Length: 223
Image (spheres, rainbow, N blue to C red):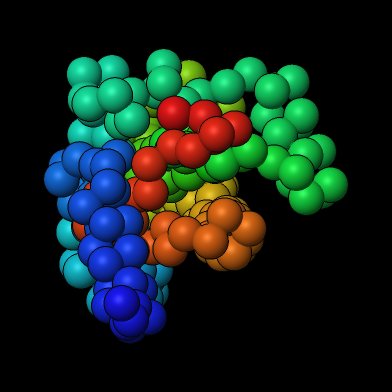
């Protein structure tokens, strides 16, 4: 009896697709790609189309708020308790990556988990400072709690032509832009980590965030 290699390969591929398990639920996937679109829109419209920039900023804030809530009440792989590790575990994992012997994680690996936390924290700060800048009264209301705002507001009463408002925006704008620049660095590191993990474990992680499905955990993998 002859065996058709093409038929065997097709059968094996079909089997791998059938055996794939769902990891990322639809809401996590929708959040991910909507956040990509919202941040890109906010970045590209900054200083150019202010109304669009503000709308995109509010969208980012809403998405971050949703993800934080979903991190506590969502499915298994969406929950922070499932993937967030301590500093020692994260450093140990990065050491394994450097030595080329890191384990495959079905959900977020420790480095990816740290990146999720860093991205959410940085986006929260970016959105919050942008929200404060949108209305001078907001900055004034929290001036007693935000040290970066208080010095700039100190001269408001002495500036009757509105210059004080512009001064108040100065420190906030600087922090806002610094956080936005930090986001670009984090995004670059995130993309590099995704590419490296995809190569090392022979798995398309971008496609997994589209389909929600990944190869089942094998021997030595962390499910």
